[in-house]
Image (tube, rainbow, N blue to C red):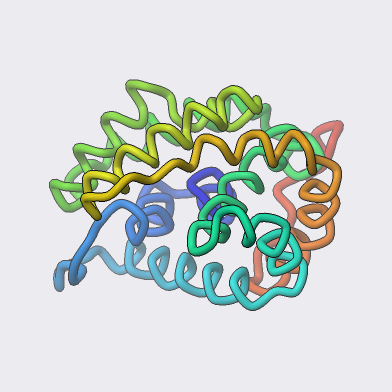
Length: 203
């Protein structure tokens, strides 16, 4: 799963949100002095990743991309699932998505001292450029994939083109959406997360 889903699955506290994002925003050994709530968030993130990678519906989505995108197919499905979550947000959360995103940025940055400096810099950029809102449209997904491609090119010193996968999302949209709809409630149950409210504001 990508950033939005990890935030959805976090407990409702800045420290938990930070922990649930930390493994994707920090390379290397984690600091030994992490706040205990942050550390619990890290453990949930890792549990989410293990359950996701082993789930047959996630594998079905990944198989749709493997022939064209190879090793990057799992990363792409993570991003595509954040898109489906964005589009169907009201089915899973009673708080409007723009409000949730704004609150997440504000609360995370208000506890910046809990983050390693590398993560702090990325989170500041994420909030300033509003990465999370990009997931709501296919064009926004293409923009996200271009940014990820640039980061991977820098990291591995070779050409990486993830942005072309936006075409696959458009062409197989219903399949990815169906896979996510079956998968996400099972993931929530697997990590012990209750639904965050349904359409109409029910808690």
